Image 1: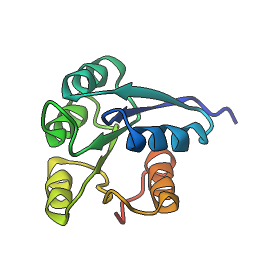
Image 2: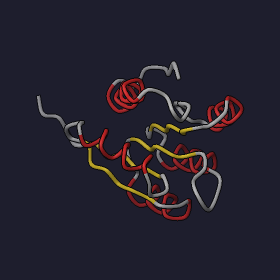
Image 3: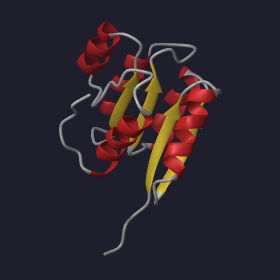
Length: 128
């Protein structure tokens, strides 16, 4: 069985959060990482690359992360989207916008790893 390569867009401002996400994704074989610093760059990469997974920071500079979720789902319905949120209200808004998952920032790295792996490889309903 041949495993094809997958792509993950990390749309998070440069810093510790993005560094941690990159390190986590680098442990997953066959995942190519694409990075965006802000809303406009993420929107352009969504249109151009149509990644398998998008991880968005709800505090992404330059625009609304939920609008990016809607763009991703419109342009590539099979793209899985996770929005990292601060509050339960942001979680509800992200899920209402079409996000497949909306984990709270600060969750255990091991739980986030399992959630990202599920989004990439299993496509089962989220518990986050």
